[in-house]
Image (tube, rainbow, N blue to C red):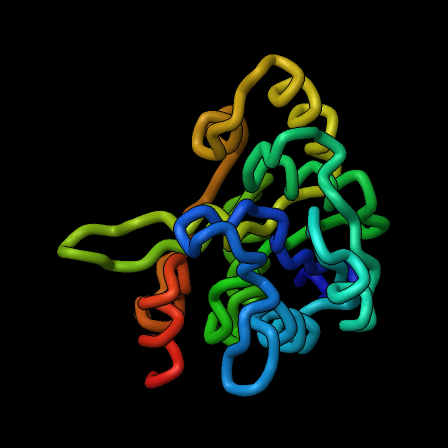
Length: 198
């Protein structure tokens, strides 16, 4: 079994928040705390060490008590830029990522991703949920071997940005989770209001 101590957790909070009017999504209030802090506290229960990827308001994120690293790639290059930042700073054999806007993700997320990755001898494990009658991959809930950094550097340097194109180059396993509601994310202010009532 992969030990939690061998996994570094990364909260992805580096986006533009464009669908929320350009606000810093991870700092939006949810039940009295910033969204990103909810995600971080939930992740810390499941990993050995953790950090945050953010590109704005760094001192606000630093106040959450873990290292904060901005993208190494300019211009808000998306989740893969966050993946790369995490892989560059990761000192464990594995890195797991979660987005800052999904505060109720499963408490056994990392354990199940790790078990599936090991059982399938995979390099990457991603969560998936049943939505509208079909399985939908949740690619930002992703456990990966930290040795994939060089592959990701080459991919991004080649001008690529799409997660599925990169993960498709590697041994990848999708791990089904029954509770789709646990992966509900606050993309818009209306979503955030809906989340408050859950």
